[in-house]
Length: 128
Image 1 (cartoon, rainbow, N blue to C red):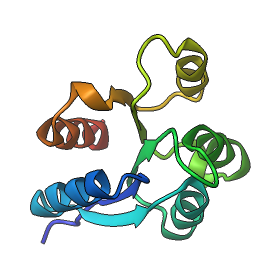
Image 2 (cartoon, helix red, strand yellow):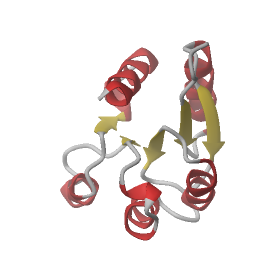
Image 3 (spheres, rainbow, N blue to C red):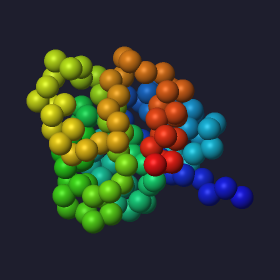
């Protein structure tokens, strides 16, 4: 039996969180959901998912703060694949620069992708 991969979805927009959860479950993944960076960081450190889908703009702790803490304060977190999901476009260079310096696996602007494309990016990243 194939070992199912676990994806942590850190997203505060509930309809999008639910849509990603449903799509990933239908494609054979196990999901863990968090609605802010604090919950996401706790879940990541506790569960050690195979990949993290991370929104940037969220309450309590934003995605960039979570990403920095994950990369800098946790040995396991230094290498876990992270795909950034954001509403920020290329005009938001400062935020984009922060994200790329932390070396996310991929950077997806929410208006530019479909759920199927997210699944494809996850599969590509997990196969590397």
